[in-house]
Amino acid sequence: MSQASFRDIKTEVLRRIETRIWPPGHLLPSETELGLEFGCARATINRALRELAESGLLDRRRKAGTTVSRTPVRKATLDIPITRLEVENRGATHRAQVLLHELCLPPAHLAARLGLPQSMQLLHLKTLHLADDRPFLFEDRWVNQKAVPSILTAPLETISANEWLVENALISSGDITFMAENAGVEDANVLGIDIGTALFVIDRLTRIGTMPVTQVRLAYAPGHRMTTHM
Amino acid sequence: MSQASFRDIKTEVLRRIETRIWPPGHLLPSETELGLEFGCARATINRALRELAESGLLDRRRKAGTTVSRTPVRKATLDIPITRLEVENRGATHRAQVLLHELCLPPAHLAARLGLPQSMQLLHLKTLHLADDRPFLFEDRWVNQKAVPSILTAPLETISANEWLVENALISSGDITFMAENAGVEDANVLGIDIGTALFVIDRLTRIGTMPVTQVRLAYAPGHRMTTHM
DNA sequence: AAGTGGTCTAGACCACGTT
DNA sequence: ACGTGGTCTAGACCACTTC
Image 1 (cartoon, rainbow over the protein chains, first blue to last red):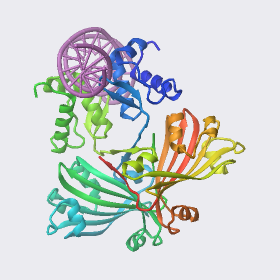
Image 2 (cartoon, helix red, strand yellow):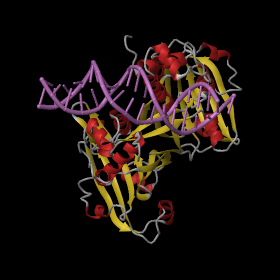
Image 3 (cartoon, each protein chain N blue to C red):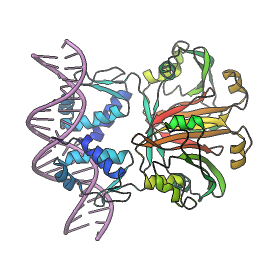
Image 4 (cartoon, protein in one colour):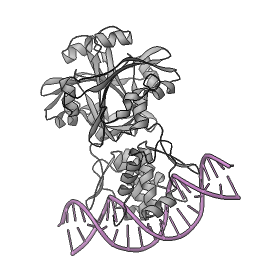
């Protein structure tokens, strides 16, 4: 290579790790030394090693140096798209039916979880997303109207709450939980499946700053898979 | 701020996005202009914007410039640890029982998926992982002995195949799939649950370079949740 | 005290995609 | 052709951690 790029460095370091030239726990040469070996600036080495450390393969500490991780916690990055795009990316046509749209008091556990008084009304939405007119996802959502007052007048028959929130209230942080649940009566009715069918469920809670904006349970139709690459 | 760091830039850009000073679709000033505004080098701006683009908030294209994403694909990063550590991080004691350990021919669909001849024997392992002596995870694994010959003599009663592979054959790439499945007869027997219970299942296929190393199905005991933060 | 990574700078050249 | 981001460089100073 006439000019070593940070990608070349990453590839070569990866090779040395994979071939166990640098086994788990091994202390790498310092950035300065590697810069000399590869004939490039320290900044280039730094970017390569920093990215490898971010993906969990290296541990870096000032003064202690860079070592090959003994417990390479693989980080899988999942894309969490808007449902409409998720459907359309599969080459299907997306449609949504609003099954419920009302202001009401939340159950106690939800109010507690959101850190809101139980006496405060929230917007409760239930939506069925269809892919090529077949049930794809059952969405059960609660929205904090104090956080996004304008949602009360949003045309949620036309644009999904999901999408509207993304456009109108950029979310800064949130928790996501993935789990499996046996379909309950409502899930079964809405998705057109048998009670007890295993469903892939995502629970998401999002905030703007520290203010809770929305909590949503997404129950995917049977057979749904979420895939990623390491 | 006396000296603008790439973190400061990120924070300020994020603020402008959240407060919709820069709404979805908005074209940001060029790196050079932002460098002037913030009084820092272009490289600093570059790093800030590059990281925001990586997390899905910005779209960047040469000549076209940097825009606020209209469809912020949130990227959630999941840590995929070694099972033993996953159990121990929950404050429980980890133990594993090897239920099956044999060389045999793989089923046709698996051979095809791995891209290996069906006539080639693979190592088949079934392991039950226990947390505080309660079933935690049922692991069903196939290992390509050609990729890691030494696994045939590894003490898999002492160290789990998972862990052994991590230490002895650093994996470079892989596919992970998450799904929900109803427990079958074997799942139910091994995990001590009813047939049909919804299980959170991970399927993982890992490679060294292009050579398949191992395929594994991980069926978690009921109630398992995988959580992450955005 | 000393060595390592963390970051910033000012400048340069290049690759790409729009025009 | 031109403007944007993508990357590299050589140097500098700093922050953290170990010794």
